[in-house]
Image (cartoon, rainbow, N blue to C red):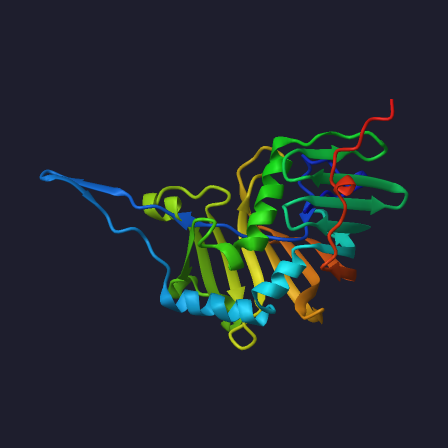
Length: 286
């Protein structure tokens, strides 16, 4: 759910003042080959740490369990937000609505005064309605990738094995601040090859060791401006139970070390499956 800074601060999807709310998660690994002079020997495949697996199980319970999260896969929320561009002292207020469905369909609508921008996908085709228009266009490839990473991030805790990831505790020197516990979800192929990280290879989650609730997540994402991928960090605050599912009411989103967006949830609904028409690419009026 990437949100662009609007009007004077907005540079479209290629702007550097982009904020993103939401969400984050992905990682797995496959066995590699180790060769020696006596012949080929297959290395042991990477595996999850027992401590990390136990922490993830605790987080699943804290989040209401698998059944509660299955209900929350059908999700609608509205936010009041602030985009924080690089220029000190400037900010842009806007509203955004995110709707998700259990089959991977997503719709994100951003409003700035009387202007709106919509991103959507039915799980297959991704589209965008630009500001000042009622007609949809094919979404840029970078947006499609961001939507894929959004879905991956939000499912990783419950489906990391199914998605081909392992879970590992962070090394001591990379431990989370303020006593948080860090679990790194790594794609099996990435863990086996141990080469340069690409977006979607690793998703880090930081957990409160007492409540087991996620406190933040970190994910490498592609740069809409075409630059090098950067780390996006989302902080989750003010959890509140909604139909038995703890939901963070306040989000802080960082690009690298820079805070780029603050968002406060104003309404939320879970468990209601939205109609197909909401996620289909709108038909041009002309």
